[in-house]
Image 1 (cartoon, rainbow, N blue to C red):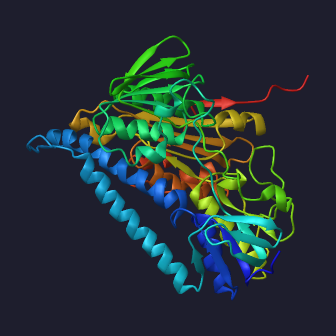
Image 2: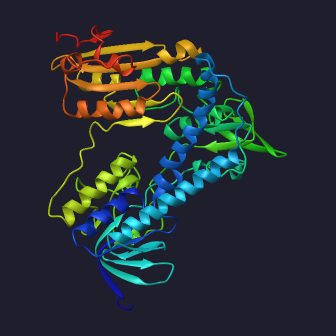
Image 3: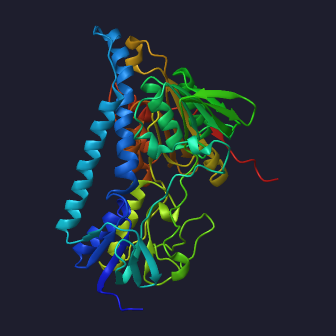
Length: 463
């Protein structure tokens, strides 16, 4: 085997959020960096995830805005929505962002190659597009995750994932979405907001498994108010084509007619075909690449960050992990990433924002917990007439008064939880919340005006 033609200090496989951040920071420390990306620079978040999805979320909310305006004295002609215009404008913005990412890497001195990259050993990477072999002192795997359609069922070839949903030629009149987590409820809300008739099918007892139970119940009720047919305890057993349409046969015997069937049932780590076995990189029980606190894999010199590790699969987490890796390996500043109290948002309609422990987790981990909860009709709805309520909930460690969890369902929940996340991370107490002056009139003021707990959980005294 011939010697590698070139040598670099860092070779990054995957130009998504984590890989791009790691490459740029490492280059800033003086490292020679090469990044290989087989699809488009920007990864899942920029190209086919957070960013295009949020643009569609904005589009889907205008329908409510037009309706609500009437209660505030506005009269306008009936609005008309054009899917093709939305998708074209979305595509232009994604292209702009991809160009910006590439320019940023270029200015940092990072070399970008459009190719799939495969490990030949711990320090050798082969570019499949050219066959060139690169010698790297350090390799970072940042290939993210990929949509899964689950077990093969009759008609699986007619099912789309969120990837294809972003490029549909027309807005389907009827959509069935299978899944119950972030992507499923977000796309169900998007399609419903744009005028589609939506059925949301989930195998569990309720959507958003892992979230606070009250959040799950509240969001489900809100989705159903908006006309989304939520069907739990079922899976899609078969998809039968009927002309240009489909009939989805559910495990419980129901049949649902649809013009598009989308599965959002999980995104497993993208670990196949990378040469991990050849290099000796160990896979963890969760299906992701096994890493330590510094994102080091089982092979010295090979690291992994982001969704491919299947730790907390969120873009900001991948970015933080990529930055910490570069600081550790090239900046002389060993840095661990703290994965506790990570705030997150679900851009459903209405939004969900959450940080810290759920009520069930708090009871299991702490025991003595005070629950502060309020649910009310937002001020905007008093004139618009919209049937919706906001949920705000704080969980407090009764022994220390520390706020250990915050959960919000309602307009602006994502923006609110980002700021609450700072307070929770700093160890703020309920007394700190209570002595913070309220901003009136806002929904968020309820976070600092709830004085009496709605529930006090206490451990039974030991006998």
